[in-house]
Image (cartoon, rainbow, N blue to C red; front, side, top):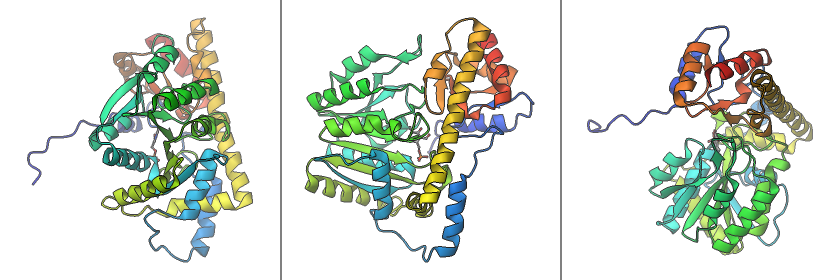
Length: 393
Ligand code: PLP
């Protein structure tokens, strides 16, 4: 049956994760996989999640299927959280999905069904799964300029110029906050400009939000989405609860569609659910139940806010300390961008060969393209990491 199938191109991160886990050098710094870690290197189960699990273990009465659209209460809570406010004169309908990845995949499948010759534009660079997802669905993929690799800043002018050349046969994938892999933040001015261009040129914005609350704050990290939603007629949002609730393997997320014609959006919402049918049919409910219990129980919601804020502050602190250590080592401000970036990731200006040397000779594990996950760093390794980077890059 499968004799003619070639081995697919391997995922870059998994072999590096394995290599790092098998490396027992005391100085090891593992900055590969995109998960939050505490100072001792654990990806903890949040206390609010533990409490919700305890409550649900006793009080849940069923594990029966949820409907094809998901649990409406959960979807409404995530909508409220993601958008942070009511968007006037627009209709938003969503469905529950197994994580943000499925949400994006379903949105792209829906686009393919409605407009098969659309081109999807992703940032250069973008999250490693974006390209394969777009291509596997059979949509065209192009890149818009984003990171200036010399300055580690945004390619602001060419980004705007490119978006200003698009039209109604284009959809633009934007990271809601905490860009993966660059950590570059679009400010309110950027978002506003992009929204104006989207409205003028008629391209379709797709926002991928996977780190809300881990950048600046829950509210600030939603600003880009709110600006877009208020200015454009239509957009889609894929939302992940993997990182901000630490529910990675529970697969919790939602796909939302926003538009000004309610009938159109309702039909599209049901189409989304029908696209899920041959795949996972209905979304897993365990993680969604946990999120729902946290968001509807004031003490747990406060506890979760506090934990999320501690996680975010740890990342910001690590960014500041690493930039400072690199300032001291280099005598320059070359690495100040690390403190300016937000979320889990930044990109070191290293070549794939230099990143390999960092791994082999210094036990410093980042990806070949230079991506490092700041949350993988512990305080006592900051100075070692800075010294290693400066020697190799
Ligand atoms: N979107 C972005 C930008 C991400 O960085 C990630 C995970 O790294 C995801 C989506 C995937 O989220 P999930 O695990 O919920 O599928």
